[in-house]
Structures are given as C-alpha cells and as structure tokens.
Length: 269
Ligand code: SF4
Image (cartoon, rainbow, N blue to C red):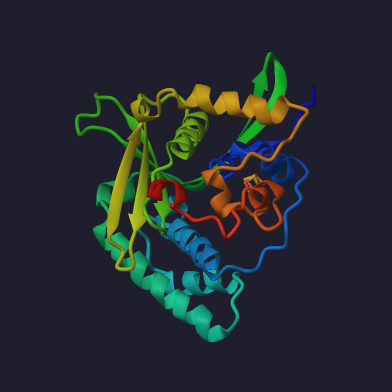
C-alpha cells in the first residue's frame, strides 16, 4: 500500500478524485499537459484580486473604492492577454461588474468583513499519521451577530462565482471545513456562493452545515481510495467532460461506437 503524504486537497482539486488515474497523474505526479492561456481564467483571477482589495479591512472600512482605478490596472497588468485592447476591455467590464456588485451588497456585511483572500492550510491525519494537506483560499469571511450582541454568532465564507450557477455540494463542504478550521469557535458556519452576472447582480446560494451532512464521510472514502491504493486505473464517467487528460485517454477512446451502428436499430424491430 502506498501513501502520498504531500497530496493537497482543495475545493477545486476534489473533482480529480473521481478518477484514480487523473488524481494520481495531476495531483501526485503533478504531470499536467500544456495548457493554453484562458482569457476567462485571467478575468476571474483579476476580478477576485480587485474584490479582495475593495473588501480588505486593512485598506479602510469596506467597501473601499478610493483606489479602484489604480487597483484595477494592477490586477489586470498581472494577467496574460493577447493585446492591450483586450486587457483594457476586460478591465472596464470588471469595473462595471464590481461597481454593480458593491451597490447590491449589504453594507453591514461589507463593514463586518473579517478577512479576504484568506489562505487556510491544515494537515489532516489518519490513524495519527499524515494523510493529506487540506488547503484553500476563502474569498471573503464575514461575521454576523444579532443586534443585541447576545445571540449566536455566525461566520460566513463568501465565494465569488462568475460562471453559470451549478451547485457542487462536495466543494461547498470543503469550503465550510476550511472556514471552520481557519475560524474556530463560532456558533454557526455558513457558505454563500455569489453568482455574479455582467451587471453585478447576484444570485446568492446559501449552504448550511446541515446541507452538507454526510459529505465528509463520502469524500473521505474516496480520498482513502485514491491516496492509499497502489493501482491507478482510468475511471471514465461524467467527470471526463472537463478532464485535462481527456485527449488521448485510452478509456474514453475505447468507449467509441462504430459509425455504422444504427442509433435506434433495436427499437425498429
Ligand atoms: S478522461 Fe476520464 S477516464 Fe480519462 S483520465 Fe480523465 S477522468 Fe480519467
């Protein structure tokens, strides 16, 4: 039985654990195929950096937009773009979205921001031995208490999402776990996924600890399988859709269907 004591598990790497071969290749051997620059990824990275500056309490009471223009130039300067025109177009689009988001955001939440871009990293053990390292970045952490100051205090991990809404309870569970490890001692923990559209309008999804009940055991079972096993078979499934190893994956190719096979032959009999 082999173990990999340096494997890092994060909300975004969890999808790789659905295929043993994929997890071993990408997360253990760290053999990634060459990846072209994705403009959407550059936009998302810059958006998160800029939102982090606006809501960082160390930059003044959030939301702080005093240096928004300068911060936006800094955030997009660090990203790869084919042309300066494309970079500036995305920068202006990002500013429009963020200004809309700030206008729609709850002012109490803004003021009660504890931390932004908060990195959490914890070793997780199994039978007292190192098992894997759980790590991840929390976009924004907010504390909520009732007005009397005597009720339960909730800490909220808010995640900015710029794509199409799609709930991933396993990733939400991992985010909540990171939130609890990073900010222990609160009464309640809540994950908020803010799906932000082009106008900065938010479709907010709230995920409670009760919503992710049972995810811990399910995810740990899978992690034991991919981290402790000696064999690393390809395991095709719906997770193949966005797999970086998709091109040339034997399992996928062996499932091909000859073009002469009538799609509905048996139904015609
Ligand atoms: S394409 Fe599917 S089977 Fe092949 S490595 Fe990726 S996830 Fe595994």
